[in-house]
Image 1 (tube, one colour):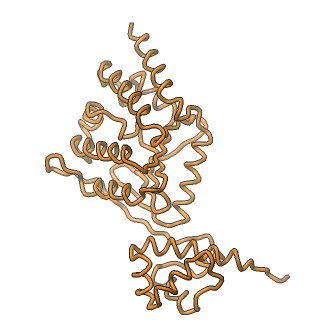
Image 2: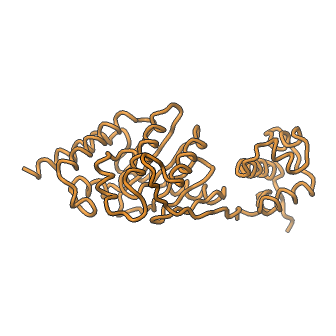
Image 3: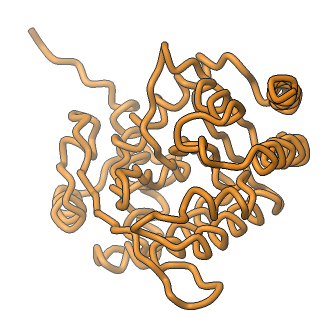
Length: 290
């Protein structure tokens, strides 16, 4: 049986994956062309949607060997993309009002991904919605970082979300938010007044930041998600507890993006409902206190 290859599909896949490789290299198109020892015009032609030809065999080999990808992957004959990953250990900064080095990298990745959608699954409540008092309570005995540096990180994320051209979606389980409202689990020791103040803080911010920030709640009895931030198509940072696993493989980022989008499709509370939903939880919490 003769295998029929769709040439247009191969060219489209090659262009998409070459573009991903160029972006991941950090060299830019001109620098990447120089690295391959080809003309910039040739690089522009290879990345043009109008291009109808593949590069020479030696150019394909140079791209594959220098960027640690396979020719099969470049041509769409394999879906096993390059496994580009690194581990980042959480670090403590002892300088006053200073971000830890890895927090600075995370904020830098937000800036790099400006114009793309950021997808974010926090370990509890989204950091940018936490008050200073809540962060101090949660990190009072934490071994990996000081409250001050996380307060700075949360403030930087909030400032990024408030700036123009930002697009942030976040997903958490409805059970985690309800547990906070009732003062359960890690929040058992948080003073009732501080918990209610945090609820008011979240109500205000979710109303102010919508639609730049869209917060979805999924049913934790139906779905599960590990903490992760997906910076557009560029990288994903999985939080493993005191460390991050950072993935830059196109295929891995795409798979995590698909998983996140499934959480959104299964949401039981949607962003335009969040402020009212939180307000109802706060009213119920206050009724229980009487």
